Image 1 (cartoon, one colour):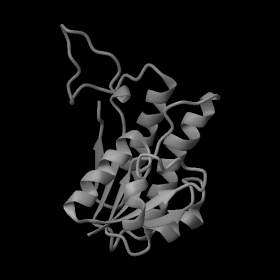
Image 2 (image 1 turned 90 degrees about the vertical axis):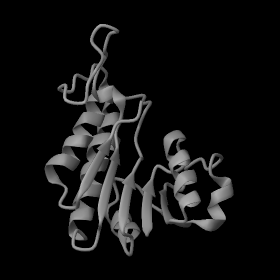
Image 3 (image 1 turned 90 degrees about the horizontal axis):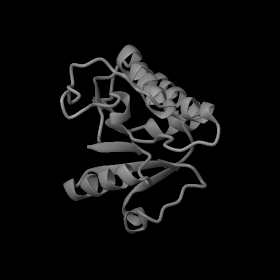
Length: 165
């Protein structure tokens, strides 16, 4: 299986990349030319690199060519301007879904890595449950929820949304 991994140079993504490589999956990474690769240097000789961004449909289309699965882990966790969260986490998901939909007949899976921040806070008396409605309280959490909705409401490829803690 060949997997396109976005955000593979980040904290969560680098650990996903470790597991993908351990499993023997062929991995294609979508990175920005300015991406810091310090966490993944050891993997770079064994993976296929594509340079682009979530706001560049042409680079997304090129990155998706020949893959079986998309594992979308890229996201903005810190921002100077609030709109940066939405541009990357909501609009980036939307752009990737649109390109994936053009290739839906051959893609097997779209996995969207979201965040626990979508759930909002819980207490010891009332821990959050999966069936609870989302209650994000931060702009980051709100933008990740909107990214999830882009996937769940518009992806023609079989999809999964994960919310790591």
